[in-house]
Length: 275
Image (cartoon, rainbow, N blue to C red; front, side, top):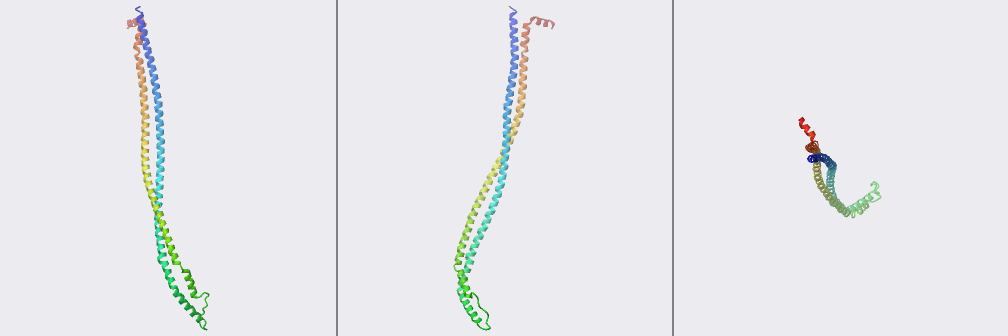
């Protein structure tokens, strides 16, 4: 009966030791599996994040380049529009000068000519009759026009009739065309101003995209550093799990040894005697 208690205690200690060793092995396997799954999940997430940041950085760089090209095009268009506005202003001045010339000088001059034509027609009639009378003389000049001088002047008078009024009407049309050019010029000026405002907004957007590009680059570098740091931490975790498992397993040597001694007392005495 005395021997049964030590043997029972020895079996219990051996069972405890074996259970401890198995628990240590299971703990190491489970811990290693968890760390591996964590490494896979977090590593995949970091990889996807890094790829997304690379794609974002590339997209932002493309958008930034497109904005620079658009900004350059808008600057060129604005310059051209302002040149057109300046040309329209010169055209407006030319139309106004032409209208003034037509109305004040040409029409007035034609009216003056038209006013003197009656007197010229009378003088032309006298000249025509005189030359005709002289041509009848034996030594007189030859004078036999198809159209008499006074009739030519009457034809000119007929053609000039109403022409100054028509020229003044044309001057009003020319001046109206100049006003239309002024309206178009104001529109082109507004367009140029709008293009300048849009160019300013695009420049601000390009600067903002540049900041986004820098931020995305920094984030990508941070993700890369996080991947390296995570890999080092996971290696450390695996080493700690293995160390902890070895410590727990080696700790079971005491109950295993004590149980073995209790189960084999004669060997224990022999060892003690030899010792």
